[in-house]
Length: 214
Length: 214
DNA sequence: GCCCCCGTCAGCCGATCGGCTGATGCGGGG
DNA sequence: CCCCGCATCAGCCGATCGGCTGACGGGGGC
Image (cartoon, rainbow over all chains, first blue to last red; front, side, top):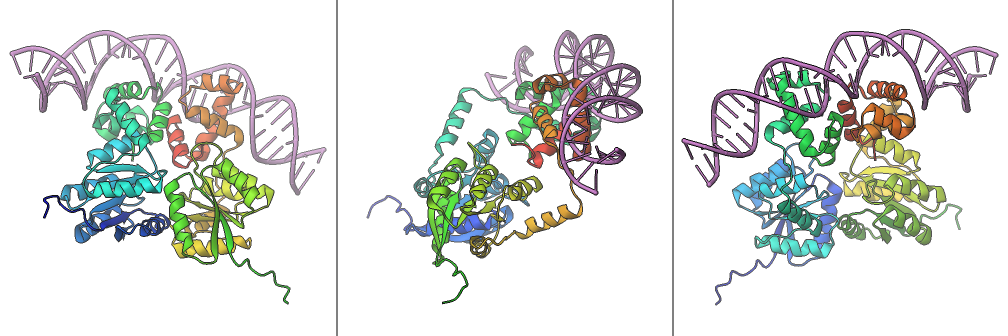
């Protein structure tokens, strides 16, 4: 008898996506692979966390955009914290912010829905053994980020940006965050600098574009 | 022999979605229905237009967000103009702007990906005969819109908004559109009015939120 | 112990914005 | 023919913004 831990005969999967059609599609798609078994479906982050604990799947296929409730990043964080399952993110966007947050939350891999099905199967099998798989565009972005550590906003700057996205003026932002207008302006200047803009409208545009806000 | 035009033994479908995984999923899902046959797949709007003309499917399942190239609305417009196929929009968002544009472009139905698969099958069969099917949330929005004709932006106002989203100042917007600053300000005031905001940052936020811009 | 990042605050000043009032021209529908 | 929506423009004015310079304290890393 060998010491090598035998790969599970079947990889047990939990799907998490708020779109029923997507879930059904994935279910049908994965059904074509004999060594992959979908043991549960979740339509929300909360449900995914509960089901992951109950079903103890090998891999959770997680979308990041989940509509209502906690988002995929938070769900990933909780599931990964439990250590019960590896989370393989399968989503639409390859934004820096999304990728970073997902990885920081403990995702084992990050795939794009535009990926070929064979890649998905392979990534699932890898994830079941704790190995990382990244879609090519995602890998590129990760590399690029390593090379030039991109201006990431501080928590406080994100607070300011959130208020700004409500269309508030400096005075209102100051009141909302219990700081002085001067401080708001200081933060704004730094935000402009980091985002490469020089107006509030531009900042909001970039923020929405890069999905820097919830 | 009866005069009733027999429903096609099999409904012939063309899929259009830029995500391979989603296409594969739909393919597998639709494969479970004996009276539905997927005769082609397109990964872009351009491809969909070409394939629709060549394959003459009964129904084109069209996503609205297609990444590169023309968007789903434009693809819908061209396919519907040919009259070769009924276009059934299957997408993620139930935004007013998306729905309106898709319907105006000639879509036969509008389904959300969050819909139950049975609804999708039923909608496909309906669409094949030219009958409209709307997802419940979509139908609600359409009704709501009928009741209170919502502020829709004029073409010019959208132009202004687009420039604004680049973070440009009034002077630059004026130059970009070959009009005076006074005119820019007039348009902006009306845009604020329609969007229910009173700052440029707020306008950009609402615009991005409601997907008023490409 | 020192330094750097982060968050906080101040004052100044020119540029810009947003609201207002009012006006012109053009096209379509009643 | 008149009205109305759309696009264009003008001037005024107070409020706001954005850039700049400079400052202070706390916390983490070396």
